[in-house]
Figure (spheres, rainbow, N blue to C red):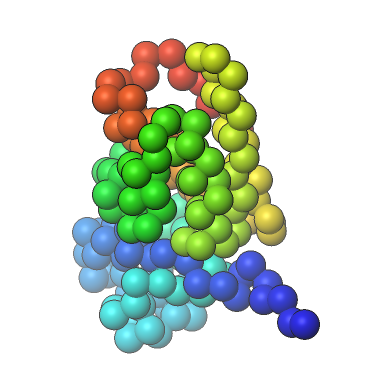
Length: 168
């Protein structure tokens, strides 16, 4: 049977669209034109093909003068803004179950990523793997992911994490 390529599967685009709108019409028109995307295709969609989302992220990184834009966008996202994945995370009875739910359901909204978690005592290891070459979108995707994961963990624990390290 045919298996859809991860770049053909839909990815959540709501947050990226918000960021693009905040940058103004000039930025939006340039970005969409550079990616060959019709603005009508983006305006009403909550999801876009992953290929387009990654192209938009790559071009955003190239067009913006703020190297921390992806981190800033990731920081603005809260657990409730992740739909079913966020609900599954918040409904889990333990941090370990929360992380397992995130790992299981992340590909439904971000099909170009796989997540794996290991929890042992007070130590938690999360591994993110791109299932396809993300190209120039690699660092923006990972920066947003790290911010989102930290927010989820802090929400579940009910406190800020003071000892966290990320390795890319």
